[in-house]
Image (cartoon, rainbow, N blue to C red):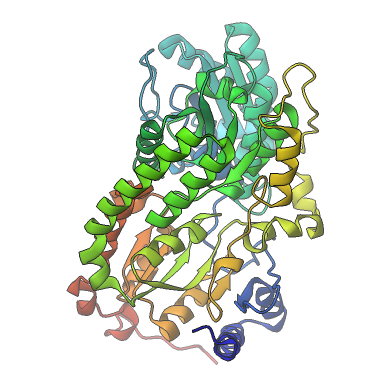
Length: 540
C-alpha cells in the first residue's frame, strides 16, 4: 500500500547522502555539483541542473561534440562515406565503438566497416589541411563511387581554420554527388549533445525531403534508434508482423535514400529523445508529421509503445493485429525470462548512461523484479529529466548559441497534417503527441538522480548503496569492476544484444543474470585494499 510517510523518509535519507558526497569538494565546486543531484520525492516538482560545462578537474563520462555528430548520429548511415578531417586517433574513437549494425540494400553499398580519415599531421597544422581534405574526398569517390559523403571536423582543424563546409560544397559541385560538412569540433558545446544537434541540422538541410516518393499504409520513421547489437532489426521484426512499414531510421542501419524520403512518413516515433528531438520538431513544422515518444526496451514498454502507435493510426484492423502480437510475444518472453527473474528478483541496479537510456532501461529492470536505486544522464538537458513542460524555462547560454538554430517554416507544397486538425490538437492537449514526460516523474521516491556523474560520486554510491550491477559506459566500466561490482555497458552492449523488443528483453535477462549471479566478483580484491607497490607521503 502506498504510504506518503515512507516517501518523505526515503527522500530525507537521500538528501543526507547527497550532502555527504559534496563534502569532498571545495565549497564552490560543491555548490555547483549539488545543483546536479536530487533525491526523488514524488510529492514535489523537482528541478535539476543539466547541460552545463563539467567543472574542470572532475573526471566526467561525457563525450565531445564530434563524438555526438559523427559517432552517434551520422556514422551509422551505412551507404554514405563519412570522412573524419583530423588526426587518426579521432577517427579510431568513432570507428564502430558503439557496435552499430547495418546491412547493404539492393545496390550493395555498405561502408560501415570502413574508417575514413585525412590523418592530419604537424605540417597540416602549420600550413593548413584543406588541400589534403579535397584529395581525400576525391580519392574516396574514385575508389568507392558513393552516393553521398559527409565530412567531420575535429578539434585541430577547427583551431587552424579549415572550412570543411566550404570544401565539401566545392567538392560536391566538382564530383556531382551530395557532399556536406559538419563543423563539429570536439570543443563545441558542453558535451556530445551539441554534436547531435549539428547532425540533425545537417541531415535536415542536406538530405531530408530530396525524394517525394510516397508509400501507402501505416508508415513511420524510427528516430533515435542506433541499432546497437541489432536492436532496430528486432523492432522491425514486430513491425513487419503488424503491417507497419518503416520508411527510414535515424540512424542505426540508416540509408541515405531512405532518409531522403523520410518526410513522406505518417508518424515519427522517437526512441532517444535527446539525440533526435530537433529532427522530429523540424519535420513536424515543415511537413506536418506528428511525433510520439516511445520506449522499446522491456516487455511491458514494448507493448505500451505498440499500443501508442495503434492509437495514433486509429485503425481497428491494425489495433487487432497489434493486440494479437502483444499476447503472443509477451507469453513467449515472460516464459523465457521467468527463471532469470527468480534469481534477480529484489536485486538493485544503478544506471548512468546516455540521454534516454538511463530512463528506458529502468522499465526492463522492473520486468526482472529489480529496483533501480540511482540513475542519471551524461549529456541530457533539463527536459530529459523533468519533462518538456520546462523547455520554456531553460535559459539559452553561450554554449547553446554556438550551435546553429535552423528557422523552419511549413513547406507551402508539402506540408499536410496526417490526421484531422481537430484530432491533432486534441492529442497534443492530452500530451500524447509531441511530448516526453522525462525520467524523474517515473522514478520512485528515495531514489537518486545525478546528472553528469563524477568518479567520486560513483564510488560513493558503490560504497554506500552497494548496487548489484551498474550500467554505464566504457569510461566507468573498469572503475566499477575493480570494486567487485559487475558493470554492463549500455553504449555498445559489451558484444551482447539485441536488447530491444521482446526477444531483446530475454537476451538482456540472460546477460544480467550471468553478471549479477557470477561468483567471480567475490574473488576480487580492490587494488587499494591490497599491498601497495610503493609507499609515499606528502612532504611537509
